[in-house]
Every structure is written in structure tokens, then in C-alpha cells.
Image 1 (tube, helix red, strand yellow):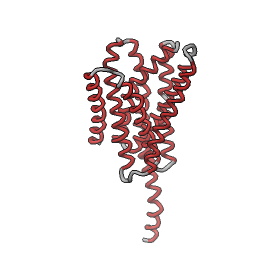
Image 2: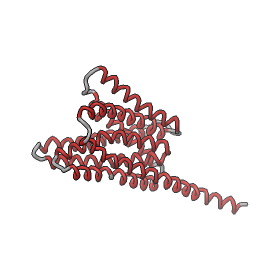
Image 3: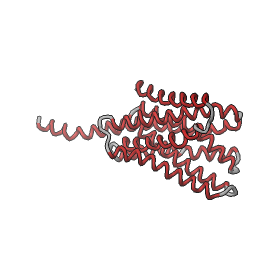
Image 4: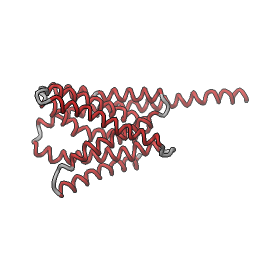
Length: 270
């Protein structure tokens, strides 16, 4: 009996690690698929060539408002909520969220600084910095997807939806910048797709980190939650405030609330 008990004590940690490894492996496949879907959204920029400007402006602003809601809902309801389940709010929690927020600020300021100092005659550098900034952003998206699926399937699905909805208007903007910088349509599509595929690399790196460091997925979730909050609060919502008119303002508010509502419903379903 003593030998059986001793063997059980020795095997228990190994079985636990094996189960954890198997679970992470199973979650890696849907996470990888999600990153591929997110990457393919870069092709949506082609819509700029086929849709009229008035129609695009009318519906795109509503999609942008909805995307802001999904980002905020995913950050607060899923990412932060799941990370704090079973534990309390600590200083480390706040620092990780703030770190993600400030990291996004630094990256954006770096890209903006180069934009301001290149001048109109250096459009090629503008395109280069846009691609670099987009690649870094997509790498963070990959981390977010990896961490979300490592926590649970519902959180992974919610995060993927939030990223997809945000990527649609962003990829259109990136495509327009490349065209403005002198890229041909084909070259703009290929370069945009190449930077978008960095999200796949982010998922791979994220799962390697999760497999190496214990419970790092929760830290990654909090960090990327800060990133999502920054995007919604500083990039998207100020842009919505530029649209005038009471009716447009009400429509944007309802779209934003609808985005948050979708994230809440996904939590209920999960």
C-alpha cells in the first residue's frame, strides 16, 4: 500500500502536466485557425476599389463603433474577468493592464513621430513605418488569441470576433496608406497580407511561452486587455466623435453598446 501511495504521489504531477500539455495542444489548433482567419481579413482592403466612398463612409463608421464595443467588452468582460476569476484584483493586475495600455501608446507615438518627420516627399518611408506598426499590432493580436484560447474556447472565440471586427476598418486604412505611398494594387495587397500573417507567428510564440511559463496566459490576457482598451479609447472613439449630427451620434452609441452586448452574450453562452 505504501508503494502504491508513493507511486501515486510521483505520478500525480506528471499526469497533471500531461493533461495540461494535451489541453494546450488541443487549444493551439483552433487558435492557429483563428489567427489565419484574422490574417485573411487584410484582403478586405480590396473593397476600397469596388465600394463607393459615400456608401463606405456610411456603413464603416457604424462598424467601427461596433468594433469599439466588442474590444471594450472583450477586455473588461472576458480578458480581465477571466484573469481575475478565483483570485483578487492586485497591484500586479493593474500594472499589467497599464503596461499593455502604455506599450500601445509608445508604439503608436513611435510610428506617428516618423510620420511627422518624413514629409510628403518621403512616402515610401511612410509606408514602411505603417507596415512596421501594423506588424507589431498583429503580433499583439496573436498573443491575445493564444492567451484567450489557452484560458477557454468561449474566451478565444470572443477575442477572435473582437479582433476581426477591429481589423476590417484598420486594414482598409492600411491598404489606402500603401496606395497613397505609391504601391501598386497587387503589391499593397501582398504587403498587407504579409504583415497580417504576423498574427500567426504571435499565436505560435504565445503558446510556446504558455507551455514554458506556468499560468502566463492570464498575464498575457491582462496585457492585451490594456492594448484593446487603448485601441478603443484613443484610436476609435475619438474618430467617432468627429462625426456630427444627433442621429449619427445615437447610431454610433447604439452600435457601441451592441458590441458590448454581443461580448456579454458570448460570456453567457460560454
